[in-house]
Every structure is written in C-alpha cells, then in structure tokens.
Length: 200
Ligand code: MGP
Image (tube, rainbow, N blue to C red; front, side):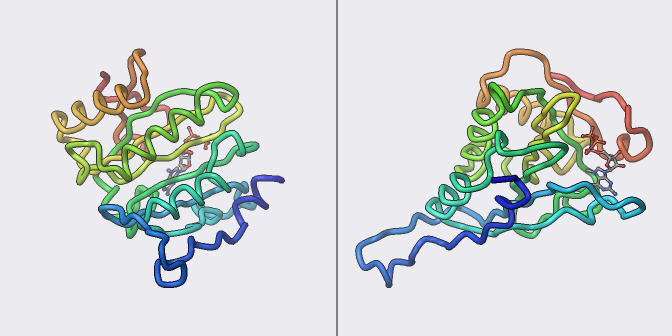
C-alpha cells in the first residue's frame, strides 16, 4: 500500500469502555495529534499546502492503533514527513508555540534505525518522560533522498539550558552517542543552509 493511501486510511478509534464493558482505555497526560505530508506541493503552491492533520488522540490504545496501522517511517516513500505534535500546535514555524523555537535533529535511515528512534521518541513524548515536557512542541520524521532524519521541535530556542537538557535526554532515549545539533527556526527562515547554534 502506498503511503499516500496509507495516510488517508480512516482509523476507527478503539471501542469505548461503555460498549466493551470490561475493556479499559488508558488516558494520556495530554492530547496529541499525528500529521502527515506525503505529497509534493503543486508548482507555485505555498509550503504547508499538503500538510494534513490525520488524527487527534488521548489514549494509549488509540496511539498503538494509529502507530501500527500508519505512522511508521519505513512506510514513507519519496520526500515525506510524519509528525506527532501536541494537540493545538501546528507543525509549522508560523504556529505561535513554535514561532520562537527550533529543533534538535538526528540523522537516521528508514532501512535501519529510523522506526526504532521514532517509536522511542513517540513513547517518551506521550509518556511525559522529558522534565521540560512543556517546552516541547513535537517530533517530525522526514524521509529524504539525501538522508532521512528525525527532528524534535521545542519552544524557546534562546533558552540554551532547557534545550541542552532536552537534547541530552533525547539522545539517551534514542540511544545516540554522536553529536546532534540544534537550529533556530528563525535562522532557517533566513537561510536554508544555516548552521546549528547548540550541539550536545
Ligand atoms: P524542511 O523540510 O524543514 O527541510 O524545509 P529539509 O528537509 O532540509 O528540506 P527539503 O527541501 O528536502 O524538504 C525545507 C523548506 O521548506 C524550507 O527551507 C522552507 O522553505 C520550507 N519550510 C519548512 N518548514 C518546516 C516550514 C514552515 O514551518 N513554514 C514555512 N513557511 N516554510 C517551511
């Protein structure tokens, strides 16, 4: 099944307790939303015109259902992204929660380690494993010809101490020892090839 098709699949939420009687659903601390961007914008179309919110959820059961059926990086083809962001936050520089933020980025490969790092990150986010959880916006996995990658978006780029703490914790979670770097969205807006400001 192509990613375009997969991403459009309508996922039935798990049956609720009342219907199932004995089945329990486990509430998450907050609501999250999966997004996808799996088609190239038509020529002249603005960035973001193909970015779509797929599903908002707040239970562990819904998360596993969505993850299993759709949101695995190894299913991505071509230039495409999956996102998990806090509900109410759009995965765009323009969103007020992201506007003064930036991102930590790690390289990976759909053939080897990307599914694992993505899943570890998703579980850490929905499981509220970061001390600075309020400073995190979400995570993006990007399939790219020149190299796949995972980016953790945060809110206050200029708060170096918070970013360093998040970066260190993320490396532990995804079991990465190589240096990773943090770039400001403001720099990326001005210059696509801008360099990172922090590294850990
Ligand atoms: P990218 O997809 O984050 O980088 O941004 P990548 O993967 O290195 O490059 P790609 O060309 O292979 O996709 C690529 C370009 O998309 C940026 O230089 C911007 O022009 C545009 N862009 C990306 N993001 C995340 C945004 C955004 O949030 N808002 C707007 N307006 N443009 C964006």
